[in-house]
Length: 172
Image (cartoon, helix red, strand yellow):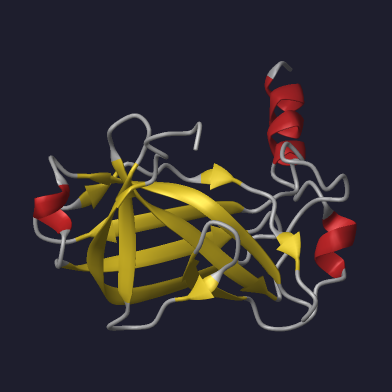
């Protein structure tokens, strides 16, 4: 007798949290891999991608992505909306990995009908900038929306150390 209520709870938990928004989607799901702190700049194979040293001493890329044909955010347009898609960045190369963990994020609408996400600090798992400066790595992004659609993009890029992202003298 106790199994039935547990089974019903499990089945209810499998439904998308935003079925009405999923039904309104039109187009083929796609994601463009990009970088940028304030604006998403698309990345292509062979592109040079800057990485910087952050305030805590680690190194990171400013990851970004442009979505089309996918649920970009929930109806509340807040960071914590359960309908927000999940994004995962990966960096892989000789002696280079990443510290990114897949997380839900709200993509913001663009004027061209797509949506973007910028300023996602993709932490590099490196001992110092010399390890990664000039290295060719695979940079990838995967977005999974709450409707179950998945889009990925992968590019081979060259990393370039652009120095510290921290203002050495904030008073000036």
